[in-house]
Image (cartoon, rainbow, N blue to C red; front, top):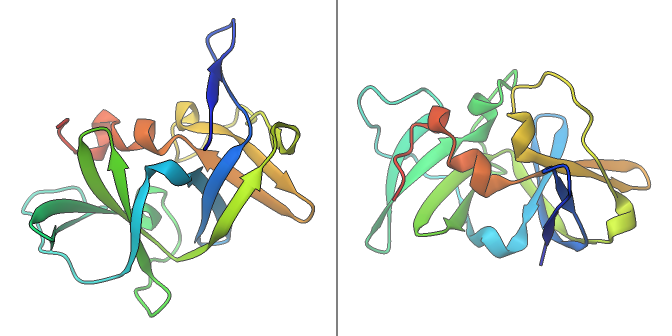
Amino acid sequence: MAAVLEQSDGANATVAGEYLTFRLGQEEYGIDILKVQEIRGYEQPTRIAHAPSFLKGVVNLRGTIVPIVDMRLKFNCSQAEYNSFTVVIILHLRARIVGIVVDSVSDVLQLQSDQIRPAPEVETSVDANCIVGLGALSERMLILLDIERLMSGVDMGLVAA
């Protein structure tokens, strides 16, 4: 379970927790495992007219209509190929279910607070407020996302449930 503490300056400081790791292009990301409902193979969603290009459409998941967001398109990855490794991570965010398309899922990692570094302030395709830190594991560097904040951003085109 990932915990986020509020620092006195208002910034978030992430402490130890379990993160599901996934790949988008060459980058590896981590999200709080408690936000993950399930991992599914990619299936073509039903397209919604006039939706942003990264909102691929919706799928019917056991009676629940789930919007599907292709994170590779959202983060401006150079290519978004749909193959046998492409998966959809179904997230449970507050009262909403959302699916995100990623290149592949790696594993679940337990990170200690000393393995998490503050995110540098740089211009990225991801809102800086949605990056809670960088996980440093010997040769690996994970970009840790506040997936709930990212998915609730106005630019996502998802109306609050």
